[in-house]
Image (cartoon, rainbow, N blue to C red; front, side, top):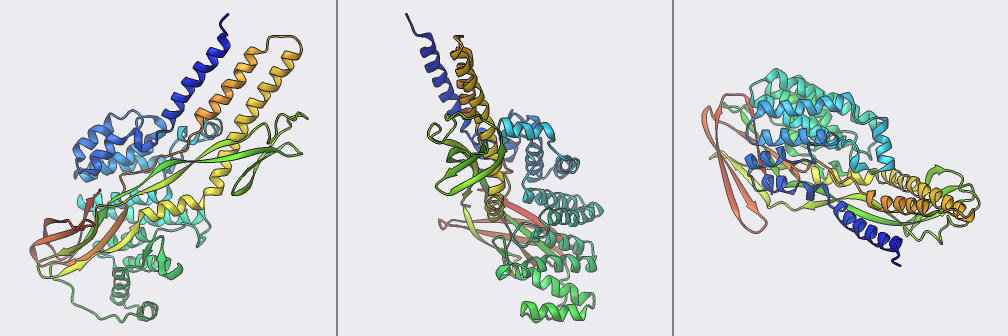
Length: 478
């Protein structure tokens, strides 16, 4: 007689293994065709891949979809639609995302199935692209509104972490961008305030370096210049001392100046990392997870009776998953900008690589506690079913159904355990910037790029000097 239960078990195990291997695919793997087109500069094709990607069309991924649509629309110069998508993303964030049922999904399934709520630095980057879009559309008033919203975002971020210096409670680059937008509008007073706020973020940080970015010399000069322009002599002298830099007043270029943002490389991707813990039942029914790194106590308490089945000897280990960032080295490593007379070097203004790695590290204990609580809930359900099956068997009743359910819960726990590997991956790895003078009328500006392998590339743009401050951003996303 064929042992059908044995064959069923083997079939279930094989199917489970197949599903497990599929579940190990990262978010980057699942939308790889889109990111491949982005990295090769085929933005029109990237938009097509984005529009037909079923994963990003799911309601839980709506924020990601909108941010990617906003970014690719910006890359092809469709600034109106770019801001339509970014505004919708903004509205999602303002209205709040998730809710009670979303939290239940995170506890019973995994965070990959929860609503994506965005990384903190991603929210600031929405303002960056929106502000540039408005400037390029000659909608200066809307750009100013966006500049003011940077202040609101900064306050919200500061409140989130109580302005702790060891947390990402401000974004220095966004504050500096705010100053540039105000200066573009001729509002020197608010430009000075924004530059000062940005500079103080650096000054309050160790070695005047904030998340991998040293205070740009351009920011120092902008702060001193606007302090002088407003007649703030005391502030001018104070910052001259802090910067060890003497300000010399210079005549403004007749054609104005160009602020050039160079967006280089691609942001790191998230992959899944695995941790293995032994699960121990405490004397009070609480659960303790131990691994080579020590013991993590989970606030999960329940009574499991006096059975000795639920102990470290019967549960060898549990598999926990957690996201980790993997950097993608950029193709280009240096660049200069020339107007035919002057050559300007770029300074790093935002290190998204560093922000990604550091902010994920900062929330490790909090997020890992959620992971282990989820495993505890699943293990408790499996235990209850197995105990029920034992009780049924002792009474002479068929317990195969309960045993099967217990095995099913165990298999479900294995297959459903998955780290959240989603993030806004078309962001650049770094943003650098420089300021170059313009002559009145036509200007030919040349960007010279140098790769790590010795390759060189040039990009030439035509800019009409109007006497005002202008902006241009260029992406090398590979």
